[in-house]
Image (cartoon, rainbow, N blue to C red):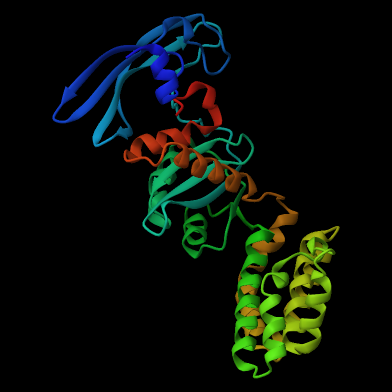
Length: 352
């Protein structure tokens, strides 16, 4: 095995091949840092003092039926230029400047294994990866926050009651912000249920055909309807044929306007008017939705105090999924979590 194979076979950059061992049907490659490639992750300086190593074993993609492992003494360094002392690879981001936080879950194996990810919305760094989903996954993170004594001002969440309850308990002074994507998605789910109910109840075949065609058109923004495919005409026809669907669709569009107001005061009036219309309608789905969203009112309007969202975290989750696909999955969860922590500093992390 050569250094070039480390790069072409495993995507490892800046390391030297040391040896290969075969133990109990497993293959263990040992590699080492290239001294001339070491540099300070904070300032980039190569004027370093070596402060010992931390031995780590990583599990790689298997070759045939053979389990493959990688042994590396991760170098700890001190920088003479900026006085930074940290591990070269996979150091945990500091929390001292944390103000805005996003929390979400990601499926590692769909429906089976999850991790909970916390992101610093200002730096874009993943600052915590917890096992599982829900409040329990965040317990180690709350301990880190308590020790760092930071003041988190706002937290962007989806509608997870577990995360919301945990944040309210652990960060009572932080403002919870619900991004409009999650709120509108909740409405779209209810709108899809209404369309299915109407489809099942109607005996008119023409109406069934129209409702079937408009399945995805109901969920689109009006500005995204395809003129060449006459999508607006198809949608208008469906809405003319069914009054409950018409009411629900335009209440969905009215709800979007909550996030397009020039001030929080005007947004509050728009949202209150929306609650009035939805709760006074004869459509049970809208009544239920109005009651449900009223519990999230403060989080919806908090957008005007803290215009943050989980968009950046969603983008990070896409990167995590891509990384997982490129590696054909990770059997070593600790290694996978370290890879996630290193996403914001990929030029310093093991790649491949």
